Length: 344
Ligand code: SF4
Ligand code: SF4
Image (cartoon, rainbow, N blue to C red):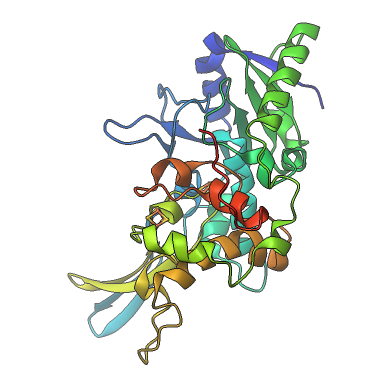
């Protein structure tokens, strides 16, 4: 598989060529909110360099709100309209590599039989992922501390390394070849710059728990859960913005002459998430909810699917309103729960 160079001033032509073959999905700027992944229209100027905080790509594959089916009654007849999206060839561009790995976690949840989700599958199965490694590292990232990031590469179709005025496009799958047709070959200098950027990404913020098997270290009765629970205001931000969190709720709503069944985001951080019909709630306090979030990401998902449920994207670190810092919690757990501040 031959790597290529995409000069940034050639991006409009590149997009035009891609859009003639695929539906192209990429992050687009919004006025008062972080960029979000959208299907591009001709002339759109997406953010492809991963340089800014953005909504995770799961928002496209697993929308925050989605009508699953509509039930109508006309003339005594009941009709059920399925809202499964169109399955068409797509390319997702500008997916920061850790977010692309988070899609692997979602795939385990939504594509594995016998509980394959037809809504997610219609958007995902025919979609190529082109990941990006930005030129600058953010202070909150700790990707190389959560997993061996080398193992993430084969899970995408290509990776674009931001080298300033150009992207180095590393093709990592056979179908990824179709994306780079017509692009220039890299020079020795390009290859060296790409290798340097990869090394910076790989070694950025390597924390004391990096080589630990966290699934063996997280304990049910560690006192750190109590400390998090005492601070947490259960806003749900850490799960809603997490690229790999997948929990949802399903509700029915009357809309004029029909009933819509919709799916919307939910989180284990909310009190009523585990509330049962008969009134019992096994996680009625914040402590088990705080514990669940981390145990699920680092232990249960590893046991269930063999993947780590956190890719070190740092969104929860940056956005938690009371500064619950997952990096600090993991450092503490691995240091026998001794305070071990994380430098920012
Ligand atoms: S750093 Fe936080 S938001 Fe990012 S993947 Fe890990 S748990 Fe999710
Ligand atoms: S973002 Fe912070 S306060 Fe909000 S639920 Fe998560 S840990 Fe709790």
